[in-house]
Length: 426
Image (cartoon, rainbow, N blue to C red; front, top):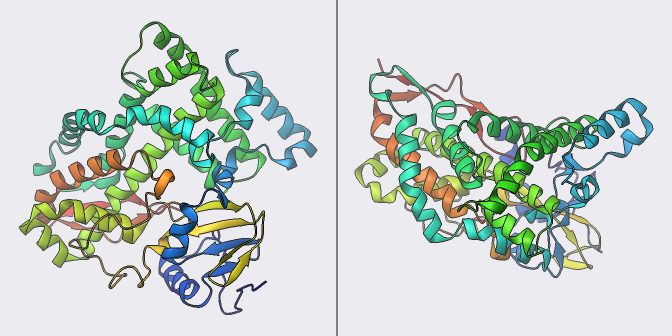
């Protein structure tokens, strides 16, 4: 067995480090250790062709590790009576319709393999058909118009708070059929779940309690909604899941997990991509000028920001057998990290890979996955980003990017900005 662990490379996926220091490390991984064994015993794969081949080989690499680590019941809690009591109290607060044991064992769709993955995807895809997405275009544009109201007379505009957060949050509220006035609550649930799964509390009793609290609050809200949809189905995801529960193709715990996955996934990635596209346009004024001169390049600008910034930096797989990748044997049972941020900058696949070029051929980056694991919400997310950036575009010349307050989120898994301030030019 060949193991690539050069002493001059030090990389752990979740270890915090500045982004400008991360990119040279990813380059070294691709060039010198395309399969790299970390000190925590993960196997990092970083070349485009290898990452793509693994994604499309579910018979060799399972998606099981993608189930959110923060939702797992931590071993440490069993030895801490206070933590254990807190978790058990949260479990006792679930509605009677929810089997908590089933919930803790349920797979998210991105952590499932065929045939379960195929079954779940078939159900959720009903809400993401091209016809259904097209029906949402007017609602998307209307929300963006609402977010941009008053920008002509404003001295400042916060891209994240005023546009990138409210747009996808409201669309997810509508898709799930959660009702009016739920935007802020859905955002809080989503943020808390992400903090539990990939924040500082990841893998701890505190993180498990945070995730369990989201499950509990969400299930208390959704359980009555499920009953209403049994009697009065609508064109939302909850209705589609209720129908599948009646057909016994989906149990209640899976439905709850699926709804939370849609809620979180529909928020985080779209918010990140809106912000990153705006920042990349400001950081590349020649490309901004090109886009203003030819707005038909907008899809390319969004796709290029998706490639260059990779909102989801990496994902996980588990090797189902000994598999040789790039001359290195990855052993059965190994946890594999697919480093999409590195793969999306692979010069073997992309010319001038570190350059932001909005006229680059589209559809080749791996940010939305590939094959059976291509993101169901990708077309919706790109529609939202195109509307947001397209309608903001005529205003960008009047503002400048406030680099002093520009702030990335504190996560190595999710790339995005917490704060993007635009200031009117003097």
